[in-house]
Image (cartoon, rainbow, N blue to C red; front, side, top):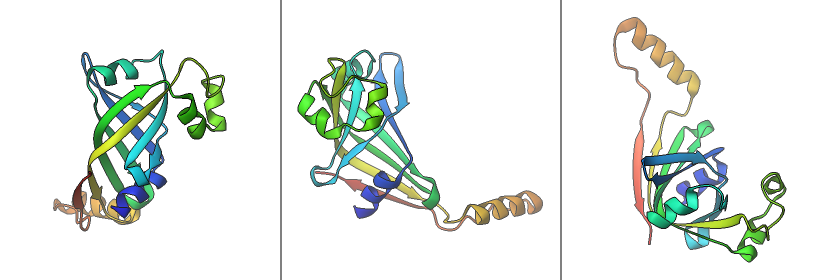
Length: 157
């Protein structure tokens, strides 16, 4: 479980996938992990479609990539969205000023994702090794030896 939270904390990418009326829809979001409660928080805008999509179907998927460690993490959970200026204030940072007038902005909503499952893939530790293996594979026609790729599944709750 520690590895999951480590990847969430160090990942430079988080994609949130919701169920739109015409199929899955993913978009980058700034995740705010709450390890103690196994929840991830987001700030979002009521003028977007995420809140409507979550209200229609609460199942979401979060994807995190930690490229330095070649770790890929997929989290599934149940999302809820609503106005919560107090929580928004606790999640607020300077970057949010580009989108909203402050934590009390009427367009600002808080999304809570209660985690249900994590799947993580750990790949080879070195991109140089991977590049050499791909080159060797092309030259010899053999499959590349990328080392051990582990998949771990963890259920929350």
